[in-house]
Image 1 (cartoon, rainbow, N blue to C red):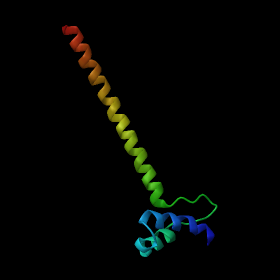
Image 2 (tube, rainbow, N blue to C red):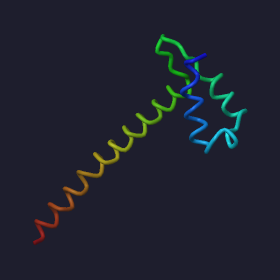
Image 3 (cartoon, rainbow, N blue to C red):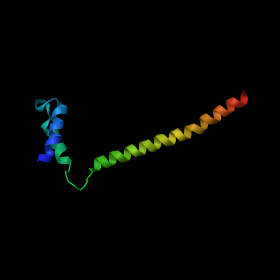
Image 4 (spheres, rainbow, N blue to C red):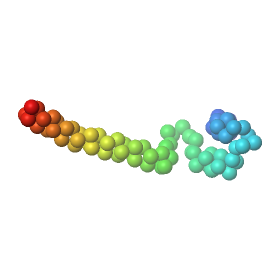
Length: 81
């Protein structure tokens, strides 16, 4: 049980003390988190990481697609000048 103490202390500090801590939410968080030495990652965290990587890829793709347009506009402007 001592492995649960740090997350509980952190949650209490974040909530502003034990009087303000939502015990139902804290219980849910503790039950949701499987504490083990197997490097277990909850499915919701895996999904969040995958979504973050997808968004990064999309942002990079959009940025790469916009670069040639900017370059061609700059070249056209130089040719006119």
